Length: 238
Image (cartoon, rainbow, N blue to C red):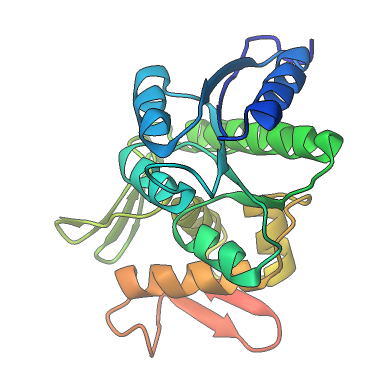
């Protein structure tokens, strides 16, 4: 067993053979596995079990994986690994836009999937540990003018207004704010926020920065908080 305390993984897959194979392999790695075969059941199980990670197929009966992912993102912070039978760039882009943390195309190596699951869970634990350390009484809030990051609550506010951020947007903002004034390359940001083994490219960083600017900048077209450093990456000014 690789886990000291069992993490719960929700596997959502309508192919019974693949579902059984995923369940078997995840159990062998020491995870507690719960399953669902359609989108409606997936949401019900997620709400009941509050899993530590979701492996989510895109093509599902009743509600597709995109809608399941979008709904879960509104209700809970859980890493989501999406699966698809199509090697289609638009699937990947849409998956990331609705909040997926990682993405694999069928057929895939079971060994690689297990590595991705482990990496996602490890990254979540590290981020939670970093936030816990940062959220001491003297530093539980990071304030930049009217922008406030409440690390103890995992919340962001602009003035008195709460700003809804996807989990990865929040992680990215915390990382940028923790390195205020420093020029951070896209590769470094990708490694520290998504992990060195993330399969996506640096465009993922640009997409998430654009989304954040739309939420925290007075004029997203002329950003003053998250500044682009041409040819390198970004610098957080606060």
